[in-house]
Length: 227
Image 1: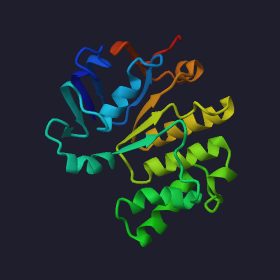
Image 2: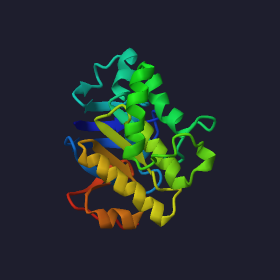
Image 3: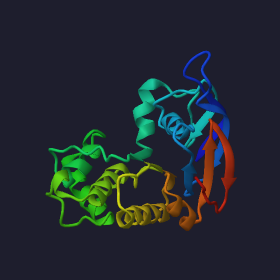
Image 4: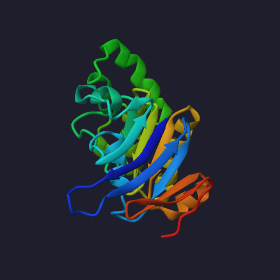
């Protein structure tokens, strides 16, 4: 599903690499947690996976797509295979819950009928049935993150990247979001979760990859994390 082979990313000729010869293999339907301090290289890794950035060297293959031969005009098609959830939600404030989720389908060119049939199912999946007409400012932080997750998975991506999705949430809502990510994973979506939350990492007992100074320093099948 995801393959990185000796990937390096540098932002300047004499700069220290943000990622340095990183090799990584993630199987379909895996749930992988990526940890590391700020500046370790996690964000760079995610930007490479979504093709926001190109590697300086090395090979990246995602969902059978070799990034070496991927043309820029085909990047939007790649991103339909990858859903992304951010710490700060990135919702459209003037749109309702339904409209925020539907937006991802609108830009993909789906018909109004397809949107009307698809969006309610995903809103129900994330536990927001009955809140379709509410606006983001009327929701709690946990509910807004659920909307963001619904928008990310409404196109049924093969991969879901959750970048610090609990960073702005209290412990109870954080666990609600983590359980939702596990639920989505059980439906067959590969999940990559970045987090600084030690309790979440250690209680989940999932595969944990630690990045430090641009290198993978640990890859544990049922890992733990110490800051």
